[in-house]
Length: 84
Image 1 (tube, rainbow, N blue to C red):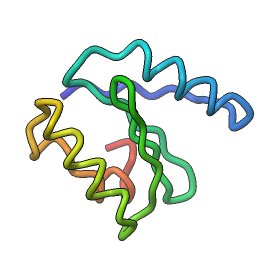
Image 2 (cartoon, rainbow, N blue to C red):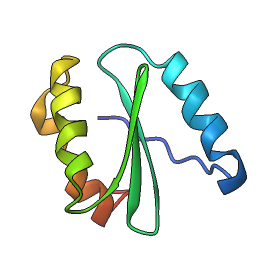
Image 3 (cartoon, helix red, strand yellow):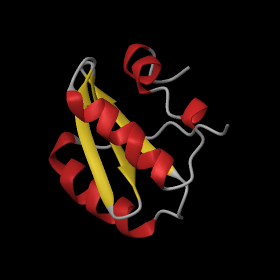
């Protein structure tokens, strides 16, 4: 699974999320992390959460509905180690 590390300035986060939602291919997602919070961006939809938040499971269910295999939606690990 390819990972690319980019830096998004906090002041431009919302712009980045908006543009990413409109640009991603179906069955792909991007995640951005800061201080144990994560934003998961799918085509046309995004979720923001931290570990244990109900949005985490909603994001996983949405990803599955978009054809992403469940084993690729391990958001708990991304929160703990976002760059591994």
